[in-house]
Amino acid sequence: MNYKKSIEKIEPYKPGLSEKDIKIKYNLEKVVKLASNENPYGPSNRIKDIRLDSIERYPDNYCRELRSKLSKKYDVEEDNLIFGNGSVEIIQMLARAFVEPNDEVLTCTPTFQSYYLETIIEQGKMIDIPVTESFKFDLDGLANIITPRTKLIYIANPNNPTGTIVTENELREFLKSISKDIVVVLDEAYSEFVNDKEYPDSVKLLHEYPNICILRTFSKAYGLASYRVGYGISSVEIIKELEKVRLPFNVSSIAQKVACIAIDDEAHLNECVKNNRKVIELVYEKLDENNIEYIKTETNFIMIDTKKDGKLVHEKLLQNGYIVRPGFPGMDSYLRVTIGTEAEMLDFIDCLKNILKEI
Ligand SMILES: Cc1ncc(COP(=O)(O)O)c(C=O)c1O
Image (tube, rainbow, N blue to C red; front, side, top):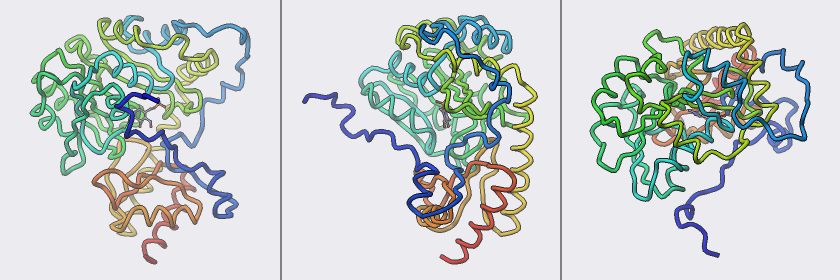
């Protein structure tokens, strides 16, 4: 069969092992998943009141109610918004709309894998440079490798997996220095968790820089990963191109409804963010007590430096019922650990400490 050459080396996406898989494999009663940066507190309780109606009809292709709420929330026009089946679908749309064979897409490594996948499928060239010594996106480095073939630049802010941010000043300097023909994607999947006051208010930058495309999601701080809703905020010009390649009816009716409810329950969001920060401070304290190194985080996950073979530590953690993520390029001794509840994290650090003593 003659399939597309560009997908030859691509492996189908393998999600991490589920709690159920690990329970069976290691004969465990309890397993804690700290691998996918989900919200351990779950979504707003108000979603229990949802009524399923008109399920024989296709969803609203325009996401009218959700669009209206977000346009008010961010003070943007409705046609500055686009919706996806998760923000990964918007990453796919960006590649479909902007990347032609041999076009260049730039980012820093390690970062979110979808940027690579979608670029390669469209036969583009993914060019990455390492994050800085302080594990931040290297904006100067990216500006230096731009060529006439550069179409997209991905900046995960905060970055997954390193948990670091680029500041408003750094971002402004970067945007000022590059051509407005290049689309700069600011992937802000974890923005709600950010504590640093220097974090950019990127929506405000849109007036000056119509070449930015901001990505947000309901999968993380809003606790709605299973419903798959993400959105993009950008100039009308970019949104118009993305709309051409968007699948019709890509966000289900129920997903639109739960996202609307989640936006209205700000108290729940704030509570989740507050809990996350409180647990992070405790995690720092416990890791410091045990002389375990880590990268300070602005997200709901943390990179811990085991100083050993991360994959080996990961395997031992699995045997003890903890699922985390090892194996990020250039960071072999690190594990990415989602911030769970206080009790989960205290037990996890105890377990990690014992494993690190043993091996
Ligand atoms: C940086 C980043 N962007 C985007 C996503 C995709 O989120 P979703 O497709 O669930 O909206 C993730 C998920 O892990 C992520 O870490």
